[in-house]
Length: 147
Image (cartoon, rainbow, N blue to C red; front, top):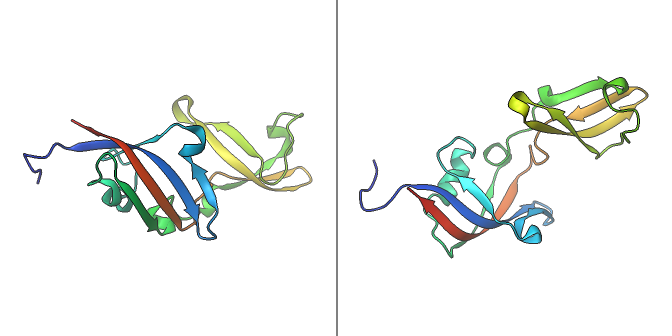
């Protein structure tokens, strides 16, 4: 049920640090100076993440931790592929940690991380790089977008 006195929130614009369990920073919008937009209600965020941000207002600072399943999902073994070296450009340096891009549906790009190279067999992981990881979000809300 919607409160008629409160507009529906559709997105927040925030600076965000994503911190791993070891305390290292996996990603930060502050480094680029470009805040992130988190859309609410379009299925792009997990319900647990939406629950953490739905009531935030401009100027709020909010820190919370999510388990892997509620953050970027668990690692899916079906998203790990063994490919022949011939499927990559001949001059591409393929070693563990290298990010490669594949054409996805509708012209989108799907990033993959090379996990292993054995002769002509290249193992590529198409899971989100933070899949399977418990992470802490540090948010600094710049703006709330309502309708």
